[in-house]
Every structure is written in C-alpha cells, then in structure tokens.
Image (cartoon, rainbow over all chains, first blue to last red; front, side):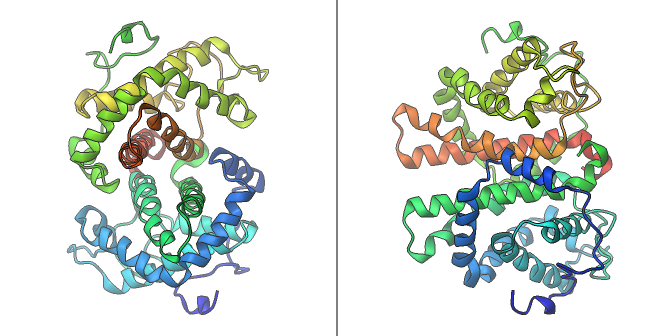
Length: 196
Length: 196
C-alpha cells in the first residue's frame, strides 16, 4: 500500500473514521448472495497481483469512458459544466487505490468502514466535501448500479495480460465481478435508508 | 407471449398501469452507461430464442439458490418463517415471463411502465399486495443489487446449450449481463427517491 498516505482524502483505517452501520453478519450474507467463496478470495488476490502495475491503464479506460459521456462527466464539473481537473485527479487517485484495496485488503471492520466512507462520498452527505469543490451534490444511484457492467467487463483484458490460461483469467474475472457487485451493494446503503 | 395472460398479477401493457417516472431519455442514458448498443439488442433477441424452452430450468437454478439460503427465502415466508408456496409459485411465473420479456419485448413506454411495477412490487409500496400474502414488506436494496451476479452468471451455461460457438455465447451473455444490470438500475428507483 505504498504512497497511500499521499492520496488526498484517503483515510483508510483512520481512528477518526465513522463506523459503518453494516455488520460483519450483513457482509457475510452479501458474500453468499454474490456467491463469493474462499476460492474467489484467492482469485481476487491473484487479480490484485496481475492488476497492480496496470492500475493506471485501467483508470485510463474508465476515465476515457466517463469523459466521453456528458451525462457522466457532469458529476465532476462546475456550475458551468466544465470538468474540474483537480477534482477528477483526486478522485482518480482514490479510485486506483480502491482497485488495490479491493483485491489486497482483508474485508474486515476497517474495510467495511471505508466502504461506508466511499458510499457517503457519492451522496449529498459527503460528495464534494473531501475535495472542496462545487460539483453536483450526488451521483444518482442508477449510475452507481449501472457501473457494475463497465467496471466488471473492462477488467478482463487486463487480467489476461500476464500469461494466465483462459480458465485462470475467467476465475479471476468472476471473483472481480462478484467483488464489484458486492461493493456497489455496500455503496448503495446511504441511498436507501432502512430499505437497504 | 402465449399464456402470459394466465400469469397472476402480470399486467404488462394494461391501460390501468401507472406510468413510470423514468423517461425515454433516462433509459437511453442508462443504456449508454451499461454499453448496451444495437448489437446487444440483436444478441439479446437471440438469447431469448435460446432460453425460451429452458426458462423453467433457469428458474429451477434460481429458485434452488434462493431456497437454500434462509436470508433470501425469508422474503417469501410467513411470520413463522415458513415459505409460502403459493406466493413462490406466483412470483416464479412472473419471473419466467420477465426473462422472456427482457429478451423479446421492445424497451418502450409499456416496457418501462412494467419495470416500474416490478420495482414497486419489491418495496413497501406494493410487495405482498398483488399476491395477497403476509410476508416481509420489502426486499432490501442490497440483495436486489447483489442478485446482478447470480442472475447474470448462471445464465451462461443455458446460452451454451444450443450449439452456438464460444464467441456467440459470449456475445449473448454480455448482452444479458448488461440487460440485467440495467433492469436492476430501473428497479432501484423507488428505493432512492430523488437520489435515483
């Protein structure tokens, strides 16, 4: 996790971080629901090794996708609709670290608490605050959910770049798809109140 | 769509159905966000042909999954925790029809309106009402989102059963995955209010 403390707003593991209301039991049931088992945990670790030196390339694909869609990039733009470069680059650094954390960190209390922080930073509760910007006040839930597709699908090519067999790449990719789906489920919490 | 009118609570296209607040523009942007294009539409139609006589087998897999997980089957159970067979079978008939509709129907106003109906039937607004049962009053949003994984992944084997090439199966499967993700994004609407 080198240089992680240089990422703006990256407060993973901080004592000051508020606790997530999501319990370990909730997480265990979510893992069952996306069929995430011990083998997926191993596959996700391996995916982390494969992706580690490709994170910037993955982010290039994702940022290219957002930048080319006005209905997405507007959430990172000022009142005149101009993308805020400093905001985009701060978010980008955290997004890259999210890839590493998802693959490398244990999914424990500290991880759950930071997922809640990520969740809140997409909503009126905390969006813009960490980066001191004036952009739209929330990312609509529908786009959070829709992103399961591009964030899952686009990673397969990168998983295939280190000489693993088709079967190994598939196993890593399924673990990644499950982990992304579970992440979005966690990030949806503040949107739904007691219907979460 | 034979026999569709025999499905309890299946009111697709009814004049009495309330309109979805989701606009055609909203849908178009969601399609862009899950990268659903004209080729996916063709692939989804083909998937519909491949799945048509396997719908009951697909439902067997999904129902087996739900039935074997107490934290899921409880949403179809009475106050004592006993699964309500009549409720499960009515929902099953609509779930099967949803597979056919998703693949075969145009995604037009009637389709959007019925997605909203499906959405409401997972929430306090309408769950239990159509089937006159007393089960838990809502399906938590987190499980709606988590289901993107099993509902997407388990269909691949069925798409591969009619002699198509790996590449053709992959193309159908990606279209299916996109369509499921988009469906869940639509079904999340009543959970999020103006943050949708």
